[in-house]
Image (spheres, rainbow, N blue to C red):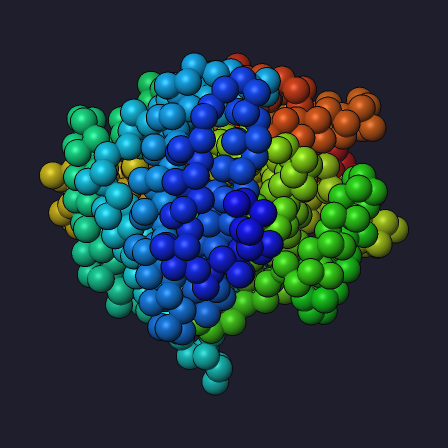
Length: 568
């Protein structure tokens, strides 16, 4: 009967559950033997890909236009009427496969994941997971409607990022304060929503038999290769290694700008007072130049990116009623990635597209894996793909390679990127430590004042060189603008770990770029079929949390910063 399944997820979107359910029933009823298991997995994968892609396409649509309430209703209905019953049905299939005791080559890690997922599943949690998605949608709606009137025009906070690059300090400060004043208007709404998230997620954990949401989410995220204690080790390593390195960067910025302290509006502008980089004319120009750059890294990457361009899988411009941030979302049935971002004409847009391009190439490289479960990635490796691409593409930013800049401008852009990498580790520690505290101290964290105070305390611990004197309210809600605690709890340490992996891969490319690119592509092609340490090793990196490994990475970055400075 599986030959009657729709060819595309778009066709399946019109199906009620009553038409989908028989396919699950067929899989559940079939005899499962060594001879039949591979076809059974292929059929299950096809069905799961179609259903999952339907959900992702609707999610994408809601982020492209948060003002379309009909879209939100349709997305919520799909979650309730299709995703919920599908979760129950998939649980029965997991149990059937696990009970069979059958092993499939290349399926060892997915089987490990299934055992964990099966143990996690609780019927009572399915509607709570749907409710969580609805809360996320509410958060996205709040932040996507934040706009200000600036110099006669309505602007989103993302569009104001260009003003933060203006050499005119008074203008930067005025812009920064106006954006924060607008964000403070939603302070109570977002804090109330945060309390709802905490209570809901605590219920999820308790109903699944866990002492707290952190322990529950650890298994949900399949963190088999590290523990919360490892994260605390990482925080300590960052405090010992990255915080002093960040202090050196901040000191250099203060000296160049002639300032006693760095205020929030002093952190993005060029420290030498040069006009902001304007890397591209419009989104079409951004796309064309990045496609060329990808081709220099590896011709296959340019071919893959061209597919995205031709298939309309890029939504890159910023506009009102568009959700914030950027992401790459795989459409598993179509085997196509979709890239979403908010370009406003600054260098950060270039970095974002290079980053999301790395995610997209990951999707393309592992597309030949036959089972959906093999293409289910942990973010610790997914972010290595994206962060490595930023670094591997960096040598080709100049106009000589069809990129965006003169040699001097490229050195400036690369310097800013490398400094931001060092500065990111302390910020990541703030975000990760904040979530560890919140979900293990829920009774305190549901009180807005406590969450805000803890965030501020952690910020001052890891980023002491940023001066928020008399701006305490702005600091207290700085996490409101970060989507991860709301839509992806505990998803942030991955960036810090992956950045260490990416720096190691980049370092290897300095010695033998062609061989390193092949190792990189091999790592991507493995998908989720190996453990994290094995995947990192396939790319030529070490999966680690310790200060020694972090120091090695920081030293590589600082050496390159010195080289770029000497070339000025």
